[in-house]
Image 1 (cartoon, rainbow, N blue to C red):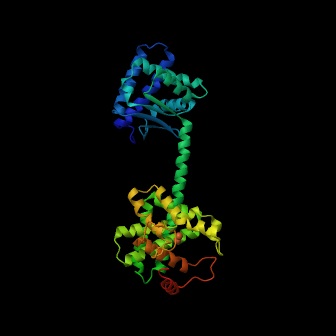
Image 2: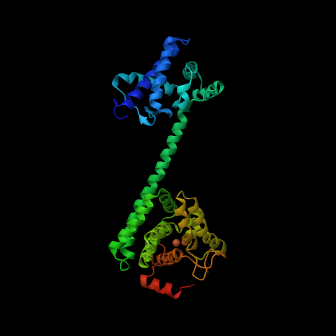
Image 3: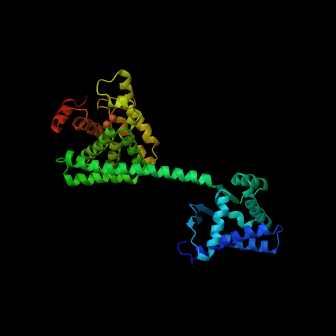
Length: 379
Ligand SMILES: [Fe+2]
Ligand SMILES: [Fe+2]
C-alpha cells in the first residue's frame, strides 16, 4: 500500500472510513435503523474486497495502522478518521482487531452487536478481557481482539532476539578477523595464503548463513574467550588438513563446523576448572572430561537442520579419543574413530600446543609441536 491511490490502499482507506462511521452511527442510534444497515453493508462490502477469502488484521503498531500486514497509507482528508481510530484503539488498550474470514457471512444484527460491544468496552477497567468474556458469551468467533500489552511484550521479545542476533553477528565479524589472522600465520606453507584465505572465508560464510551455528559460536565466545579463539583456530587448521587429503567440499564444510563447535561442551564446565593451571583433582578432571558429551547434547539442541546436526555430532564426540580408543569419553559402542574425529584430534592438540596464551611462558614452535605429537602418536 505504498501508493495511497492503488486499489489495495483505496480499499484499506475505505475500510477505515466505514468502520469509523459505523462505530459512530451505532453510538447515535440505539435501534438498527436504515443508516446502520447501510453502514454494515458498506463495511461488509469492503471486507469482502480486502479479505479475498482470508482474514483482515487491523494492527496499530507504534501509532500507525497496518492492514493485512501493510502499512496504511492514506489521503490527507482521511487523517481525522485515522486519528480517531488510533484514539479508539488506544482508549480500549487494543493492539489488533482481526476479522476472521467468516465475518462476511455474519448477520447485520450480530455485526452491530459486536460494534456496540467494542464501543461499550471503554467503560471496563480491562477492555480486552471484558470483550473476550462478552464475545464468548455471545458466541462471536469471527472477530479476535488482541490487547496492546501483549504486543509490547512481543515487541520486547523481538528486540531481545534482535539483540541476541546482533551479538552473534559481532562475534561472527570477530571470527572473520581471527580466522584471517590464523590463516596467514598457521597455514602458511601448508596450502598457500590465497587458498587459505578463501577457505577461511568459506568457514565464516557458512556460519553466517546459519543463525543457529552463529548462536552456538556466540555462546562459546560469551562463556570463554580462550575456548572461542581456540575453536576458530581448530576449525581452520582442521580444514587445512582436510583440504590436504582432498576431502570433498561438503565434507570440508562439516569438518569446519565440527572444528568451530568441537568444544561447545566447555560452556558446561565451570570456569575454575576450565582455567585451572595446576593439576586437576579427580572430580575436576571428571567435570572436564564431560565436555565432549555436553557438546553433543548442545549441538542436538541447536536449531540447525536435521541433516547438518547429524553430520556434526560425531567429530565433537570423538575429539579426545585416540586411534586405540583410549582417551575420553570411554565408549564400548565404537571401535574406531571417524576421519573427521581424527583430523579434529590432530588440529586440537596442535593448536593447544602452539597457541600463545597469557598464562603460558612459552608455546611450542610448530616443528616442536609436530615432533611431540609424532612421538606420542597413538597414545
Ligand atoms: Fe576439547
Ligand atoms: Fe579443543
